[in-house]
Length: 173
Ligand SMILES: Cc1cc2nc3c(=O)[nH]c(=O)nc-3n(C[C@H](O)[C@H](O)[C@H](O)COP(=O)(O)O)c2cc1C
Image: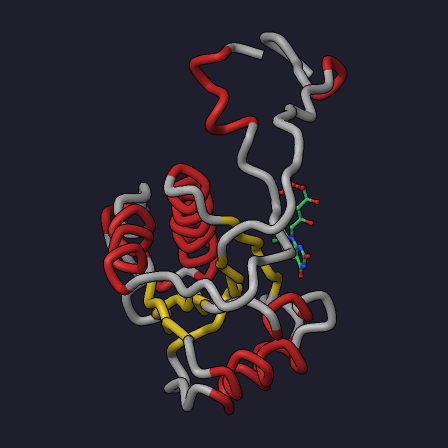
């Protein structure tokens, strides 16, 4: 692994957070600036971010996401949503690709800032989409794509790649 790329290899899903340590508003701004620097089809930037600090709301998201229980101990959650009216050509696929790029930027920024974060799947599970839609009073053209749990890491994971030679094709399949 190339050392120059270590910050990419060292970004891991962090699901345990140090208790009682908050994430400042300044850092939240940094995370969101990084997210909104992501590539976006035709530069439509269809994303919206619901920043959640309210403990009851974090617990409710956790209740709606079967693999999102770490939100009960995270100081911060970010619900990443896409606006179907802004998406390139009104296409769901562009919205999902743009939001995914923003989420990855947010995760890399969290890691670079010493935070730990984990991507939590929402779309395309209808029950999860509906639960978040209700919880955050989302308008009908706003689609919750994923949530991200963020906190100060209470676990350390090794840097790694999951490189597989057989996933690489040269000039033809
Ligand atoms: C679309 C998507 C949905 C995910 N949903 C969850 C989730 O609900 N809960 C969770 O703990 N991790 C979730 N993850 C994180 C993956 O489990 C994790 O990225 C993968 O195991 C690789 O580990 P790493 O992030 O440490 O490299 C999700 C990742 C993606 C891209």
